[in-house]
Every structure is written in structure tokens, then in C-alpha cells.
Length: 263
Image (cartoon, rainbow, N blue to C red; front, side, top):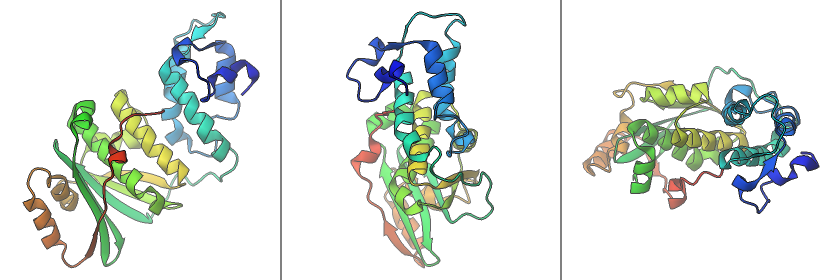
């Protein structure tokens, strides 16, 4: 970025609300100088990291020339690009936007009390997780759709390094999550933040994700795991029904429940 916008750096110690810069310069710097949608990150998935910037710029009168305050959420978007662009823009090859067979598949599910996820590690072994949602997550999510996308976020953050360089197919019985990830945008701040975390982990580990809807009946493994928080017998039933597999339970660290979004 040019010196005119150096104050937008993530290392700046000023309060974002007090930061100001010329809108015409911000427009050009952010949209044409090294962070265009045509960077090596697929444009469809990078949409979420441009939508708030564009909305903010549209709110400024066309011929406005005086400095304006940059809100926290715009500073967050700039911080994302400052970390992402130097690593990926013009360096990594653009991955194919369409692919046929996935390298890995995992399924997830959530209920109002807990989450669960399941992934085949090999033809004879699988990994899984289950957990109860802490109160702060339930309050922030507000509804089941928020908890469903948060569960996908947990799975991606938990298994992201295992997926490096692969094409990943996610199964979910929540249609809202399917549409959110495939469209790459949301009007809900909590779900938007979850999506940003998902896409950043995918970008950092260079794997592609696609999500498809699966009926609740077909999603039984993850459904049982998500309901362990309601009744421990659901875990016994899951283990019994999958006794032919070598199962590895993945530990859920408290870091996965951190909903403080730096983006």
C-alpha cells in the first residue's frame, strides 16, 4: 500500500474509529493494487472479503473528498488482505474452480446443545469429534443455523492441516449452511465471521471446499455425535454402529470455541 494509507496497517496502534484516509485512495488501493478478486484465491470464495469494503465505499457520497473515519469492520478486512495477499496473490497457482472427485469427505451436524463431525481417514478407519456448545457460543449464534455453520468452522479448523492441497467435500443436513458456503456471503455477522474463518483456513492450507446437502437420515453418524451432549447413550450407539471401523476421537481444544474474529 502507498504511504497515504500506511495508517491502515494492522500494526497501527491507533483506534480504528479514529483512523481516517482519503476514500478515493482507499478505493484504488484496495480494489486495484494487489488485492483484486482475480488474485490466486478463487473470486467466488474471496467475495466475502470484498463485500463489506464495497458496501462501505458505496455509502460515501460520490464527490466526497474530506477524510472519513474507518470503522472496525473495515480495518478487519484490510487486516485480512494484509496477511493474505503477500502469501497468495500472484504466487500460488489458481486452483480449478470445478473438480469432480473429492480427496476427502467429512460430515457435520449440530443441535441446540452440541456438535459432531465424522470423516473417513482410510477405508477401515475414521476420525470423529463431539462436544457441547459453551454458553457464549450459543448466545452469539442465536439460532440453529448459526450453530451449524460454527460446527463446520470447528471441523475445518480441527482438520485443516490434514486437508492441505486436497479437494474437500462437506456434507451437512442444514440447507442454510450449504447455501452460505456455496454463495460465499451472509447478512448475519456471526455467520459471516464463521465463513471468513473457514475460508482463511482453506486458503492458508491451500485446499478447496465444496458443500452438499445430505438428508438427516443419511447424516446419521454426525447426527448421533451432535446429540451426545443431550444423552451419552448416543455415543454408545454411534460406537456400536461403527464397530467395524478403527475409530479415532479428536480432542476439541478451547481455542476452537474462541469467537473473537480478528477479521
